[in-house]
Image (cartoon, rainbow, N blue to C red; front, side):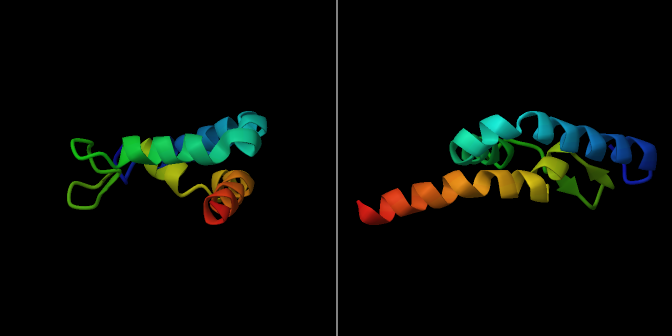
Length: 88
């Protein structure tokens, strides 16, 4: 999507927020592995950039990665995974 397409950007933000809320029970239980796998997919070597300022484009993945509700829902399983790893 282009930066100038404000309506599409707003719709993408709303749809991402809605998808996160629908998936919230799953994210509370298994959020850390899902989020890690998604971030590996988005930031893989051959993937297009999620935010390309030179071309004036933004990907829908940008809204997912920067969504604070998604980060908050994945926090419990991430902290649990860190605790298990530290205790060995």
